[in-house]
Image 1 (cartoon, rainbow, N blue to C red):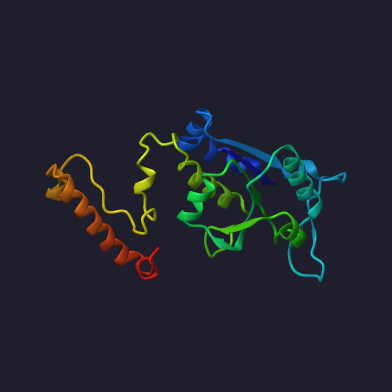
Image 2 (cartoon, rainbow, N blue to C red):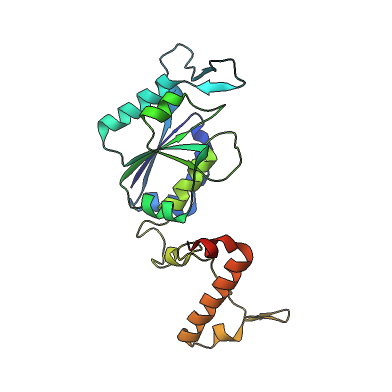
Length: 227
């Protein structure tokens, strides 16, 4: 899978993409991530990428030319399944979207900044708009990093245990049940006996019951909506 990220702050991705699962996925050749500095595509002397909004609204707006040129250059080199814009008013990102995106071959993630991007980019280039929550960040970089991590960990071969991602919260419409590890007792706090029994059928039953219980308590809406 190839992910191209358009940004004016490529340095923000150095930490998240240089460690752990994303690093291993790239080393294995299972995922490729390319950062594109939008200022490199500006056609003006000072590589300016923002300007005042028409109508005298507050805040600066990212200009159409650098973004359009960057996207068009990439699309001339290969086909893209989605061109995604990170924006607070986009569709709320959730597990089922991550699952679908992880099956694609090439995607573009556009990180906005300032007051937003020229609307004509959204009208003529963007195929999907995503939000990671109902709040505003300084830019789309952190959201793009979150989405990249969520997608890449689902690619077959990335995680050490192929079944691990399938038992994550939200995959079956429930939150994950509680988990424990050694020691079986610490300061008098004990691991539930059923988990030490070796009875796989009863352990699976316990896990389902606890997952439903936790979902009812923390995400009741998930059960009501049947997701």
